Length: 269
Ligand code: MF3
Ligand code: CO
Ligand code: CO
Image 1 (tube, rainbow, N blue to C red):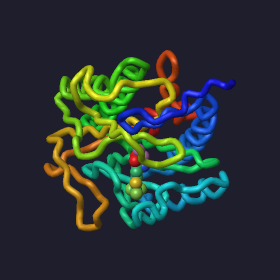
Image 2 (image 1 turned 45 degrees about the horizontal axis):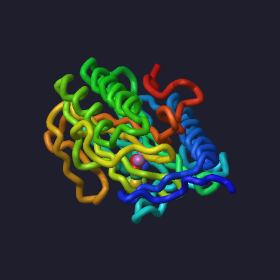
Image 3 (image 1 turned 90 degrees about the vertical axis):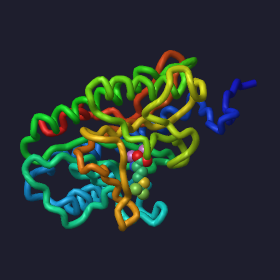
Image 4 (image 1 turned 90 degrees about the horizontal axis):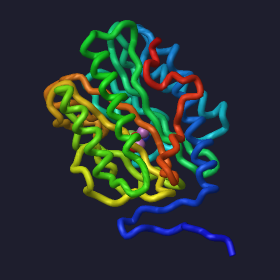
C-alpha cells in the first residue's frame, strides 16, 4: 500500500504529500515571473495603478487566476505598498517619485495551488537608509528561511528574524504575519516574524507556508487607514517587506517563489 503522510497536525497545520510540491513550485514560479516582469516598469512618473494593470495582463497571459481579486472584498491583483505603507497598499493614481521604495505583492492560483510572493522595488535612486532597510529586510527573510527544517519550530523562524532585525536597530512589525497556504490562500499557522527560539509548533516535512517579514526603520506599530486595507507605520517611518512561499523538506525547505531571473533582492539593478 502507498505510504501517505497527509494529515492535519494538532495545531491545525496541513501536511502535504511529496507530489504536492510540484503544484506549489509551478504556482510559485509563475508568481515570481510576474514580479520579475514588473522590475523595469518601476520608474519615477509611473503610477501604482499602471503596475497593477500590467500585473493583471500578465496573470491573464499566463492563463492563471489572481488570488486577491475578490478576496474579502479586495478588488485588485496586487498590493503595492509605498514608503511608510507597511502592507496591503491599494494600487491607484499615486505617481512614483524618485527615491520611493515599494513592495509589490502578487498571489496567483495555478491548478488550485496558491503562489504568494512579494519584493521591494525602487523608483530611481534610493536613499542610503532606504537601501539599508531593504537589505536588512531581505536578509531577515533569508535568515528565517534558513531556520526552516524538520524539528525546528515556528518560534525559531521568528527568533532568527527578530534577533537579526533588532541588532540592526530596526523593528519587526507584529500586526501582520505569514501564513500556511497550499490549496488555500490563508491557513494555520500564523507565521510570526518575532518570538522565542524553541516556541511554537514543530516544523514537519510537508508543511507549506509563507514567511513575509515587514521591517520598519522606526517603531513597529501600525494603523489601518479609512479604506480598511492600507496599513501604515504610526510614526510614518519607512517600511519594507519580502515574501516567499516555502515547503518543508526532509532536510530543510524548498523555496517555491524563487525568481527565474535571479532578481529577487535588488530588483532595481
Ligand atoms: N498577499 C498578501 C499576503 O501576503 C495578502 C493580500 S490579501 C489582499 O498574505 F486582499 F490584501 F490582497
Ligand atoms: Co502571504
Ligand atoms: Co503576499
